[in-house]
Image (cartoon, rainbow, N blue to C red; front, side, top):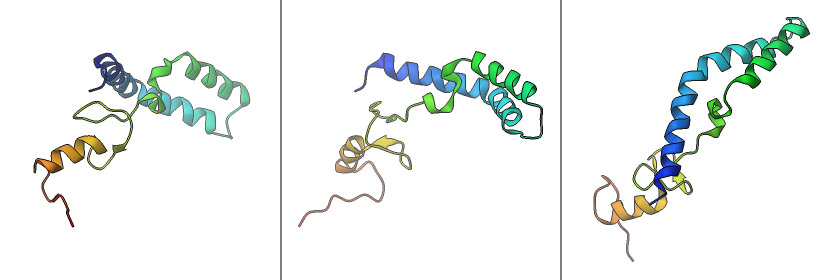
Length: 101
């Protein structure tokens, strides 16, 4: 199991990202618009820099839903390889059969 504090910090980051997503998207659209004057784009850059860093989507780490492990994460399943293997061995994942030869 991962540290509870690390998992909670990641959950807090997810909430901050959700709250600031529309603001960040609007500011980035202004910044990327080449037809606007450079002063207006620079002001948008400064406003974007004032937003919290944890509001960026890249700050969120994918973690296993079962154990909270941050590495070896399968996006399709939402869990780590170790948790998948343990659940597969006990027969709790439908369609997964342990092979032996």
